[in-house]
Amino acid sequence: MHGHQGLKFTAHSRSIAGKKIAFSLYYHFFDDDDGISGEEQGRGSCPFDQRKTSDKACDKEKQKNGEEKMSPLIAIEASDLSMKDKSVAFPKGYPKMPMYQPSSRREVDSSQVLDLETAVKDGVLGGGGGGVITTAAFASDKLDLKIMIEELESMDVPTVFICPISLEPMHDPVTLCTGQTYERSNILKWFSLGHCTCPTTMQELWDDSVTPNKTLQQLIYSWFSQKYLAMKKRSEDVQGRVKEILENLKKIKGQARVQALKELRQVVQAHGSAKKTVVENGGIGLISSLLGPFTTHAVGSEVIGVLVSLNLDLNSKSDLLQPAKMSLIVDILNEGSIETKINCTRLIGMLMEGTDFASENIASLSLLVGLLRLVKDKKHPNGVLVGLSLLETICSHESVRSSFVNVGAVPQLVELIPGLTNECLELVLHVLELLSSTPEGRLALKDCPNTIPNIVKLLMKASENCTQLALSILWAICKFAPEECASLAVDAGVAAKLLLVIQSGCNPMLKQRSAELLKLCSLNYTTTIFISKCKLTRTIQ
Image 1 (cartoon, one colour):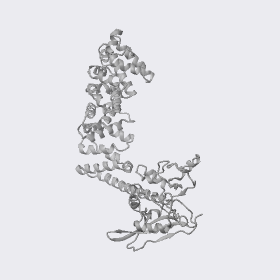
Image 2: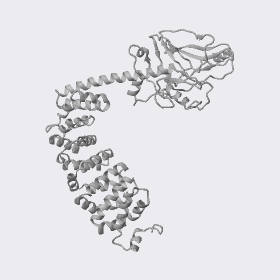
Image 3: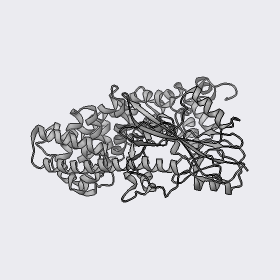
């Protein structure tokens, strides 16, 4: 047994602009018998520093090297301090631990603060932090740490608060003899599986006890308390502002109304609590009522920007699907900015979900033309996906397909194919497949010179779903005009592509359709001529 063990605390003053205004307590372990001493750094959880020198030798060495570096745990505010370094030792027999453990019953003076800012600077919080937090957070009603962590789930948490096992913030951190800290339940589960090592360092443990890290737990609680209370205050401020804007919208007109709606749109997009406040205070009906035959596009654009961020119920959707309001939304889609066009497109898509609507109210020629302009706008590719998604939804209604073909949609969509992403490719191919179910659609696909070459290239290229859609389109038009289209498909290299599909691991239905299309394309040729036209290798022949 060692003769005398304990902790030493060293007080250091701070100077700012020539004035000593605060001091920090540092601590390290000491042992009188073997002279082992080690500075506690980081979170207060590192192992002993194995330096074989006596206490006196350590003190002399520190005087030569100047003030030693240690991590501050507690900063005590003071107006003027002129203290010399002092040391305080715990009584003999104090058990050895890899970290300092303050008593949970220790009373904290109201002038004390957890110096998170300094802890960040010294690397304790790994770049996290958030300023100085007073211990007033621990007074009165104590907040539940688990609830705070759940509600702040999307926030970036300092890495030192994260358990290395679960990668989640710790509620009850404990430290092993290796100096590594874990969530209690996680490390105990690790031990229950028969492991006798530290999960992070994989060192074999010479002591299987776990020590509660109260200092880190207090830092975690303080950090989450500050963020949680700040979030709650912002939420209360936001809710009050939303109510005020809704009241003002009942009275103001003109440019003032536009500015109020713009502010409401920004608040609703930034804060989830604002959406709930709008719904609970009848905001959806109030905002929707601003859309009418005499509404300016400036007001309409802002109204749509607000509505697209809210969860609309069936009654609200039915109200917005009225012909006068839909006509205004479509006009704004055609004439607004790219952001407004995307908002209009999303809103129309929301209105079509889960509602029984008259197709003539939705699928007007003006809307279809506006959506085609949106998906063809190369300057703003962010509108392509949302535009194609709405076109797919609209074309799912059979009564609309002929109208869409008549506005020249087929050649415009075919020209888009080479430059689209896989996600957009599936959408545009599905639209073309739906259009190919009508005589007008098949004729338009046949007459477009780039249909077959562009579609053939997609076989076994993007995804299995794209291959299936491409095969369906090729089958429709080759069946519609076999003599003309089959030869064009053979010239485009369809035979080799179809053989790849047949030999691949695709689903049996896909292979069956490929074999049928290959047979259809070969009907007008002798075997020798067909093989020569397909330019197949001897192995494939």
